[in-house]
Length: 216
Ligand code: DX5
Ligand code: ZN
Image (cartoon, rainbow, N blue to C red):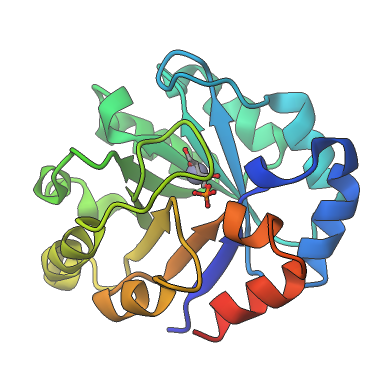
């Protein structure tokens, strides 16, 4: 499968969000990555339901909602209603992960689990068969513009091996510090969804930056 590109609007210009969504609509991007931070699970607050609904009004591509929040179960339906097409919860935030994943699927969303840099891939073994996607964080979640953690390549390879019989169609998404210098190596390791915030939005030509990632 060709890899997918999901620009993260965390790095967009929030005063010109419609313009930036339309840029993504007209680009070679596949999804729109939407980062929700609660100031509890991560030391930063991003935005909530009114912004997600406003993005949905203009987006022509699926919304890939990444919940960096405690007790995500309380808000799954609200994010679905706001326009989420896929919902990612953090392994570290979900004591009843199997139940949480079933709820996401019953809502009709793609279901994904994210793991922090210090969380090993093998902990997902017993849930892998239920998932559409795993998000491997390649920075500590909470902020855009951080440095890519090299150990990520090893984790992608381990997850590809682990998913080979349990879930061969599993999507592996990488989030944090993705740019033109590491995208090829990430794909070679087995990643097939790449999130990019800073490397897209700080580029002089944002559509060209997306295209470069897409054709890596
Ligand atoms: C980080 C977020 C990322 C962030 C990536 O906690 O989950 O999605 O937007 O930003 P860059 O691409 O700038 O590392
Ligand atoms: Zn994210």
